[in-house]
Length: 250
Image 1 (tube, rainbow, N blue to C red):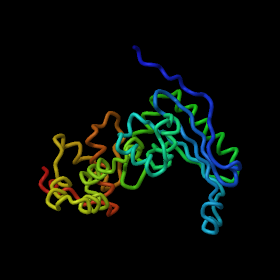
Image 2: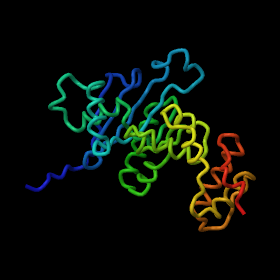
Image 3: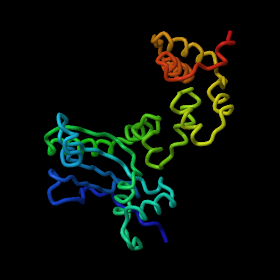
Image 4: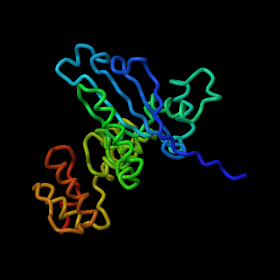
């Protein structure tokens, strides 16, 4: 029997208080397969009280939840934490909302302001654009969304280790500390931070340019140049350790 094709949903479905402008709420819709867009409106005055004095009243966030990208164990944890007592007849749409509540979401964009209707229009416009533009959507999913450098896709999956591993390879102090807290021995951390890439020459040039804050202007730069440049900028700012192998590079 052929698999049933689930059509995208052009209608936004609402869940939340009867007065979203006062207490917040969420709108969700299926984009394709088991992927859902979610827009959340938060009244920061109501959520934070006096701590929000002097700041915008509303925050609107757009996110994606892809049930096929979130493993079964994580979904089960989400259901236990945020779901109904009997999740057996839960639809994919509501399962996606539960995963969103649990934090399994890919942040795509956010807006702040005092006119909640305008912010929602901006969010829906962005959602429509991303639904049509697969290339831009893929770029957003690869974009870092937190301080440790997790991409939107990794954040949705609850994958912190990938960002930590990248951070350690970049010599970043915060990633090295998190790796150590996670039980990685200091020798392994140092070896990873000091590892010389196979294509080391453009990395070295990029690193030196990063230290000086002078990025090369020619087109078609090798990827390792960019990696080296980023490392140089981090070292210059004091956010990363210098790669030990560069001391002996000729």
